[in-house]
Amino acid sequence: MPESNRSIYFATGNKHKFDEAKDILKNYNIKVIMIRKKAEEIQSDDLKKIARHALLKALESCKSPIIVEDAGLFVKTLKGFPGPYSSYVHRTLGIDGIIELIKNKSGREAEFRSVVAYGDSSMIKTFEGVVKGMVILRPRGISGFGFDPIFIPRGLRRTFAEMTLKEKNKYSHRAIALREFAEWYLGSHL
Amino acid sequence: MPESNRSIYFATGNKHKFDEAKDILKNYNIKVIMIRKKAEEIQSDDLKKIARHALLKALESCKSPIIVEDAGLFVKTLKGFPGPYSSYVHRTLGIDGIIELIKNKSGREAEFRSVVAYGDSSMIKTFEGVVKGMVILRPRGISGFGFDPIFIPRGLRRTFAEMTLKEKNKYSHRAIALREFAEWYLGSHL
Image (cartoon, rainbow over all chains, first blue to last red; front, side, top):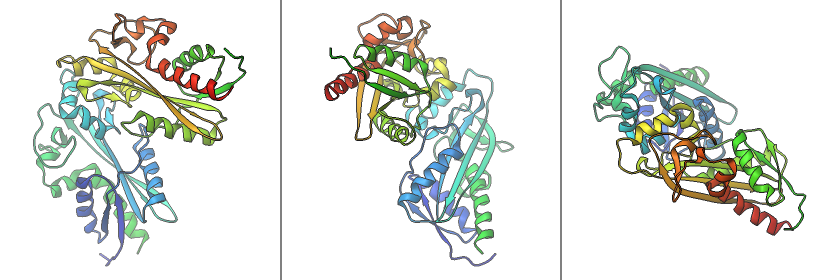
């Protein structure tokens, strides 16, 4: 792997996300610096739109190159809820609220989606990661954050909250999006 | 009341909201013209911030003077959920979802809040309306929209959805905000 002294900023109010990104990106020799600032998010069902908008806002006020990331848990039987509003819903209804909503329904299918948006002085670009799986009625684990304790990726037996950061980073939506980003970034910044 | 030929625009994708506004504002001789365009909304717990942001966006692309309005149902036992995301939550979880979330909780207190934001070439201003009441477990009525069938204003016995538009306009959060706006508008545009 080529030596790289590249540094990028990551605007986020979420230390967990930063730690995950740092762990992924160091494999690509990309140094990531946290800008502890929640990017402005619009209301939309489309994570990519939200991430692009947040990135444009971040570019107005922060140093670049910079990334922002938006993610959500989309539960099929709830028509995609809580989706882009996962953070708000976690804060108000919590995990118990999601369990309450699904416990009398049959379907358990869900997916976590992540969009990473990158921008510098000349361009912006987005990268998406999706991990399919199921939601469960009894939370398990204390790692990670958000709805990690009730999500099990397809083919696995443990929730994201039962995994170490490194394990979660093998499978997660965010890790997929970040690796996509990193591969493109290294390829175009040799 | 002074004769007024004032016309204002109302940017909204919601015909119900427009009809309510038209009914209120005609009492003030203010003519309102619908611009069928959902204003861009940011994610925030603060309706006023959302309305101001939407107004600034509307001013960029639409004629003025213009108003936008943002509203939400804040259920106390759900820590304010669905709040600013009422429209998204209505579309995904629906009324049944809210009932599911509250049925095993004790509190039924809730309030509807509305913020009307007005803007022209020289200034912007916001007006707020709040109506306190309770949410119920069996929807009643078919008028209105959104969560109207499960909300009863304090001191009354019928839901918003069991009222005619004119009755709802006596009590509603939106009507309160719109009347505040109209009184200010007439006072400053004689």
